[in-house]
Image (cartoon, rainbow, N blue to C red; front, side, top):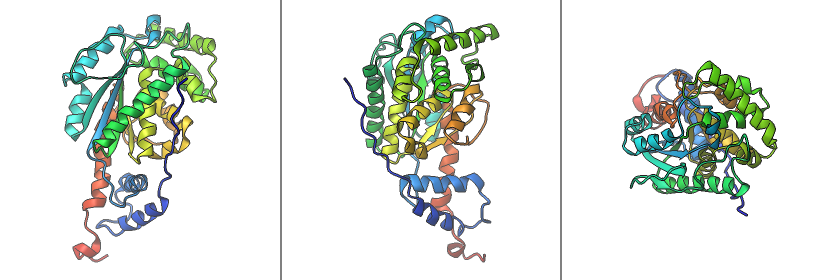
Length: 346
C-alpha cells in the first residue's frame, strides 16, 4: 500500500515580518498608503524567510484528468474536450498560455489521468489511471491511487522548484471537475450542495438541478469520512485535484508561495490544509471566481481574494492575472527608496 509522504512545513518567520513592517514605514510614502500591497509584502517575507522576497519567475503546473462522473451528464461539454484542451495548452493557444507568457512564467502540462493517450513532446505524462471512476456508482479512486496522485503532484512541483521558480500557480483541466469539487466541498464544510454548485462550463438551469441531484446522491452513496481528507478525496475527488494538493504541500515545504486560482484549485487547497494546516500560511488567493462554492472554500481557508474580475475559467488563469499584484508587492520592498536614502524629510 502506498503511504502519504510526511509533511514538514516550516512556520512563518513572524519576527522577520515585524522587521519588514517597520522597514515599509521608512519607504517614501505615507504609512499604510499602499494598502494590501504592504500586507502582501510582509506575508511574502515571512513565507520566504527573506526581508526582500522574490516571486519571479513563477511556475505554472496544469494537471489534466478525466472524471467518470461525466457519464451522468453534469457538464455542457463531452469528455473528449479534456484531451482537446490539453492539446490547446501544448500548442500555446489557451488563456493560461497567454497569461503565463505575459508574466514570464514557466508552464508545464501534466497528464495525470486523461482518459485518452496524448502524444506530444511537451506533455509530461505521469498518469495514475485513465480517469476516475463514476463516483455516483463507486469510489472515484482507490486509496493507493489517491496517494499516488498526490505523489505525482509533489514530484512535478519538486522538479519546477529545482529549476528555480520562486512561486507556484496550480491549474487544472478536466470535464466535470466542478462536480467533483462541489462534492468534496460539501463533505468538507457540511454546507448544502445547492449553495455550492454553479454553472461550470455553462450548463442550463435544468442541467444545474440535475447536477445538484447527482452530487447529493453521490455524497449519500459514498459516505466519505469528513475528518479524513484522503477518504473524501479518493471517494469523490479527481486525479488533477489530488495532483494540485500534492504540489501545494511540496511548495509549502520549500517556502514557495502558492497562488490559488478559482474554485477547483481552492478546493484542492482545502484538502491540503486538512492534511497539513500550516500549508495555509503559504497560500494567496488570486481572485474570486463567480462559481458559488468558491467563496465558501476561500472562507474555509480564512483568506481574502486579491481581485474579483468575474472569472470562472480555471486553468490557473485568474491566479496568473493576479500575479502582477503580488509582483508589485515584492518590487515595492526591493526597489522603493527610503526617506533617508532619497533625502526626503519625514
